Length: 252
Image (cartoon, rainbow, N blue to C red; front, side):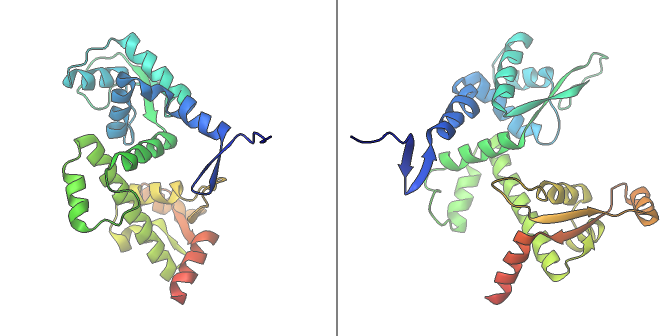
């Protein structure tokens, strides 16, 4: 008699039933609804840059001919919140992507890192012919050019982020103890963009090692720089993972 091990095997890789259930019964569950998907697309387009209110979302939905009231929108927001794709801010605020002169404030919502990963995974899955295939520049241009605005923005933003990470890695491979201000000057990037990249990829978790080490600079020089640049000052270094990458690159 065969023993039930509660595992699927795909391409020699083992996927536990519980993990598969989490993907479909939690992360993707609210996206079975077309209205929830439309709201999620609004977060993909705007929620990475700023928090959104129900009025922002209602206005964006009206642009595509969908008229949902606040109660209906909140219902979809709660389902996306429970799945971990968006989060609710503790503070309230005014709409961020439409003109608004009233005094009334709203709950603020924003897409999570998990939501961005799910969106990126969906984009890769739906790009016909792009999986397990090396793209040349013509295939790439055709793919990008014919995407709708939301998906095009996601793809381009991802490319920009990957480019910024690679440039930071290359610069730190040459000088592994400089500040975020130095990186800004050498790469001619926006300082906020540099800080966001450094802090995002300096986090360790169980599946993804940190790429950078970020060490706050203390003392008078930091207070002066912070006053002048209006930003915290950090020493930036390669993580152990990135040092191995740099070492292997030099050996080639």
